[in-house]
Image 1 (tube, rainbow, N blue to C red):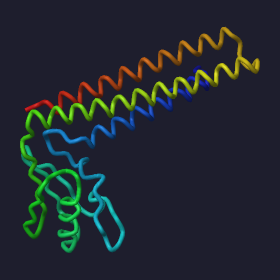
Image 2: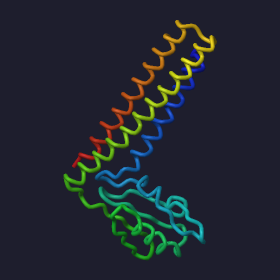
Image 3: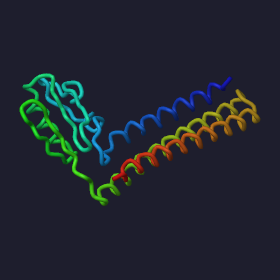
Image 4: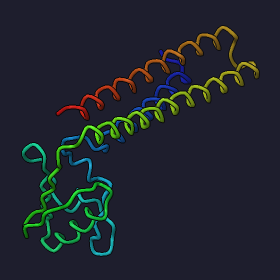
Length: 185
């Protein structure tokens, strides 16, 4: 059975890694993904609403997304929201759907995206290490208060270090996968 401290540490580290994974999914690569539009809000009767809650977003062909609002009167609002975003895409409105065509990215753009992915992953590693530091401080306090023995402290420190190594390695794998995805032609 796992120690509650180790379990708590693992849960926190897992949340950090999952958060970084979600952030990486939103990072633009050469291919379109509906996740890119998750942060874009449309004015839906005065309420800022994510595009995926007012429209169907589908990937078509190799380099385009089709956005079909559930209400036709939202076409212009969706189009304006996309234009106002930092995606740098020009939506094409044909009266029924909005088509987003993703141009083939240059090598320079791809390198920028890889750098951004690396920064995101580095923040994740920092978060994991901060969790380790926080838990190790808790362990020292528990030992100081006589709640755990020195042997238990060492054993738990080792387990926590192993967890840290595991999740840092997982973050490295996430980066490698994202880098490969970005650099694909």
